[in-house]
Amino acid sequence: MAALLEVEGLAKTFGSLRAVDGASLAVEPHSITALIGPNGSGKTTLFNLITGYLSPDSGHVRFDGRDVTGANPGRLYRRGLSRTFQQARVFPQLTVQENLTVAAGYSWAQLFGRRMSAADRERVARLLEEFRMAHVADLFASELSYGQRKLLEFAAVLMSSPKLVLLDEPTAGVNPVMIATMEQHIRERHAAGVTFLIVEHDMPVVMRLCDPVVVLDQGREIFTGPPQAVQTNPLVLDAYLGA
Image (cartoon, rainbow, N blue to C red; front, top):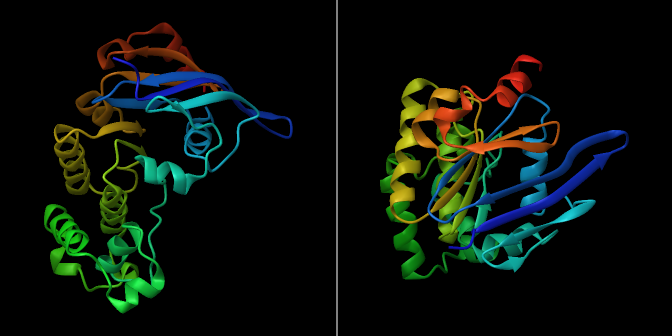
């Protein structure tokens, strides 16, 4: 089976800094793949290159059999590739329900005119129930806790019925209860057919959730394998201990 996402030789330089240096990786369909590495190893920059927020200096990205190198993020979203960010990006001046409505592709005029299809209304309602946010549906996103905003962002990317979701530090800065909640939602969506690529610093989460694990160091992939092998691989240990 062909990889759902193929990254080949991506590179990006900022001045004298080589942030991503010929990085390559593959994400197989129906996997939960982790992307880990020491601070400054290029993980978020690589995410930005894959999702079109940055254009690479060289290299290629293929998604679902098509070359999407440097494609507009909105175009990728519509094709089934969506992402979250380290700091949750939601519309603080909109309600929880309105955030999900906008994520479905509705314009501001349609949003406030309430011209929304019955199918999309049902999808919004279903996600609110799934993420246990129905009771805060009419609150402004600015009124939510940090963990709730991260959950809302996760729910919003699912409005596009994605094939692949890139999660950037989904459990960072949240309490253990919210970490367990995040894990549960990832597992449930994975069981429903969604593929994940996850940047995550919490190694117990990676060990419980992800297989395979891709390790990045100094902008390039140095190891790909099962989570158990990460803990004993000398290249990985050297990258972390030397960081």
